[in-house]
Image (cartoon, rainbow, N blue to C red; front, side, top):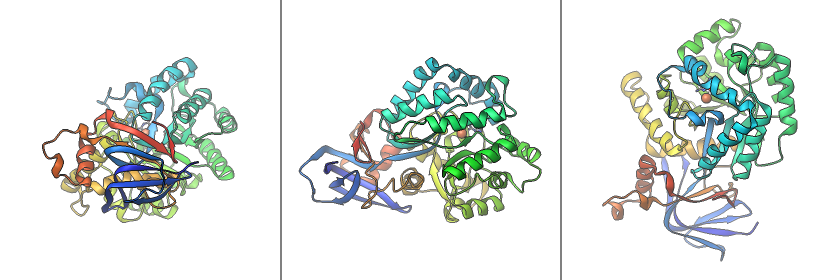
Amino acid sequence: MASFSIHGDIIWTESPDSFRYIEGGYLNIEDGLVESVSSESTSCDILETDGSLVIPGLSDLHLHAPQYPYAGLYMDEELLEWLEHHTFPEEAKYRSLEYAEKAYSILVDDLKHSATTRVSVFGTIFTDSTLLLMRKLSDSGLSGYVGKVNMDRNSPDYLSEETVASISETLRFLESAPECSIKPIITPRFVPSCSDELLRALGGIAEERGLPIQTHLDENPSEIEWVKELCPWAGSYADAYDQFGLLNSRSIMAHTVWPDDGEIELLRKRGAFVAHAPSSNTNLSSGIAPIRRFIDEGIHVGLATDVAGGSSLSLFRMMQDAIGASKLRWRYVDSALRPLRFPEAFYLASKGGGAFFGSVGSFEKGWDADAVVIDDSICRTALRDELSVPERLELYAYRHPDESVKAKFVQGRRVL
Ligand code: GUN
Ligand code: FE
């Protein structure tokens, strides 16, 4: 792959507390990797961006592709009722490849025009429509993971599998997964939807084949009580996953709003990732996750839209909501947990979540060249000439107009 440079106002975070940036600089890219950020170009192939912001690609650590059609609707119930009344009936429609084609095309097109370059996505229990989703996401140039969802208990007849069939369909999914930028991930929906036998088998498959895992943890108080009844032998919800071999450094635990001290310690020891979904946690009245504590204790954290618990695909919106939620937690719950600041929220959406996918989300030498060019002049303000590059990024993140992603690169390949 040839080398090239992107000329613009380049900004990124290497550590959570501060930005690195260079106004009118060059992001030099070679063979899909970051070569340098400098005031000089190292290539004669230069993309001029006319003073746009150039940021690392953002990572969405958790979203439900089949739920996008109703993103922005039905926010008046808590998790378990919402799943039964809205989520399960919608997901059942993906038995039809024709519906999947129609619905997934819209999602993938919207993701393509966003600042997101990496995703970890739930499909449905239906193998073939999940394979279709993988191909579509890969064709759009995005990179990441898609999982066929497993559900063999406490699920409606129209969206449930026999245990043996759930396992064999998972194996068929793994065998049929296309060779492309979107890889398979083991995806038990959550403990209430999966029998012990199924969870044990999935943990075994993940270990044998070295596969990553995604699921939900500690999202809602009624869900947690239910898990206690379903797994009386487990020390905690997180311990149940751990005993089935589903909690390790390749696992994403979505939400984790209500962890106890033991679970926090277990997450840290196992090196698992928490997908923080602040919009969803508000919309479904789930609560406020202790993100400052996770960061302080060295737990990996990234941001997630959790569409359709979240109504927006924008990780800028998630930055704003993560900061807002942390302020409410600080004010109402725990004054020892300082609110997040903007550089920290940006870090979570870029390098924090990007770590799940490798060296992703920063402009350090040798890192994957995921880059997004943003025309922030669309945010009209009389202050424009007075703003620093970090202030322009902050203003953009709070206003995040959709139509301003001008170009996008994943591992150095232009996808938009
Ligand atoms: N827990 C189990 N399934 C789901 C889901 O689809 N969305 C959310 N937010 N939580 C879940
Ligand atoms: Fe979710």
